[in-house]
Length: 411
Ligand code: FE2
Image (cartoon, rainbow, N blue to C red; front, side, top):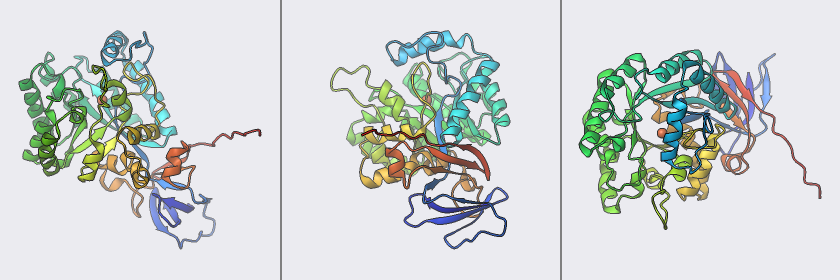
């Protein structure tokens, strides 16, 4: 199959792409159709590697308003709403919602999801269900599962044992939540435990790290130091790190050295963090988003995630990562021309590094033929016009397509 006239990742010139046996067999402006070969003329549309959701909680998604709406919109009322919803949690419930969410994502060109799953639940029902779904959805959506201790590792009964069981059940990634632990000592100890658990079982790490406006929340330095000392490096990711927004600059300059040495990844969640952080402030109100611009300038890998989709903590979301990037560029003040053009990387190549997708990802000859085609000529226009994902192919197989609607101005 030959895709003609693709603009790959904003490239100046158009190229043609041949897909055979599920792989990119050739990428060149000189390809001609073979006799009988199926040809699709993309007419200069933007072709990107598939979108990657690097941070979401599929076990809570699509539950907003069930059984009650979060009226204040705060994190704390969200927790109250969830505790009422949690009573209804069953395998079938999780299965139904995750299947719906995965299809929402697929319509928007997402082919990989890293989901955090709450393991502070002695039944581990959500973890078991996600492990099953990871298998049944394997051909359509790659799912990575983080054992996420929502209520702490040392501050929750048998927290360490639940984390070990989650890894035995098949979690791909070990999580932690240091800012939620009872004490600073527990915070450090929980990170020591989590990173050692990952090292022992050859797992990745993704920590909900300092998701708070408290400038004294310093889990990040411990995450980075352990990543360095245990030799885990870029297998480790720090998600959220919103306290970094409030750190003093002298501390950040010192911290940056360690962050670079550690080679850890960052995931920022612009929609949810902008909505939930700064809630204790009067005015001025902090934006509460980590220092994406500065981390990027230092060469540190940052990706963007949705975090929550239509649940007690975030009442919106359709699975479109374009919305995440759009918000992120605004709140991080990254609206320079080149910053806008390059920002697709937050939900593609940067996220691929975080998820350790390696050579299974990217528009290169010999790699799996997985890509999306946008209804725009470059990423700037795609972002600005909220362009549809016209086609989504995974390993040479069409997973989703859309036909953009038309509107007319009658004057
Ligand atoms: Fe999260």
